[in-house]
Amino acid sequence: MGIGLVVLLILLAAGVAGVYGVSRILAPRPIAVGPFLSGARPAEHALSRFHVRWYAVTLIFLAFDMEMVFMYPWALVVAEVGPVALVEMFAFLGLLLVGVLYAWREGAFRWV
Image (tube, rainbow, N blue to C red; front, side, top):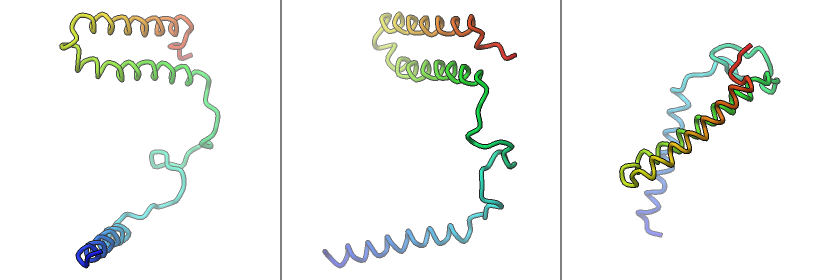
């Protein structure tokens, strides 16, 4: 190991330690250590039970989220692939629409 590499490693360690030291000195101190909920203490435990309607909303959100995950790469290649890509995307959107219509029929969008 050359002397230059040793000096470089020492300077690197000193730089990292210096950054951590400055951060420790200048970083704001938390008022209280504990769960944080928009500046207020939470009213219930983090593992409390949620109403069952939230699970349906979560599944619907995931369906639309997955739609966006698949539509972004499709949008990048649709011009290269041509009409076949357009037909495939509308078939995919049709399947998602069937899922949304089923959720609607089952009352997943009712909030009462």
